[in-house]
Image 1 (cartoon, rainbow, N blue to C red):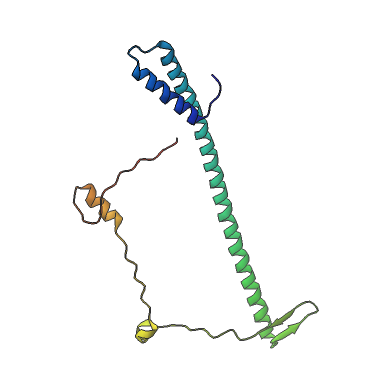
Image 2: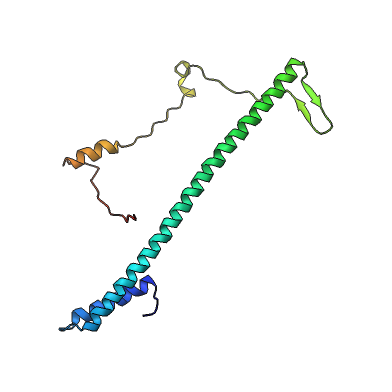
Length: 165
């Protein structure tokens, strides 16, 4: 039997099953063909499983590299912040607000104004914002629904999913 794609094996199997069901006497060749299709389909499914496992490993590697690069980025940003603070402190100690070099200029300037709220309760209502995001307690709902309680607005759902081990 030539190597077929999984969907082709599924179609061939379904066609042979229809033929086998329609006949009163099932031919031994049909049973052998069905077994061969099942075996070939199982091999294809196993190979796809290996591809999935390989891709999952690659995704884990990518995730770890992203985490490593994020940590490296944060460390670099902190180092820049510390070096800038070091230069600023040095300039303040020397009582210099501006230093010019042949390639760079360093100056201490005022930042744009910003607001610091030290007690939100003291603010007038027009300055307050309330963020309320309503959400369901799914753990409590799950526990009660598992106990057989009927809850309007929620149901217990059982789904299926493929596991590869």
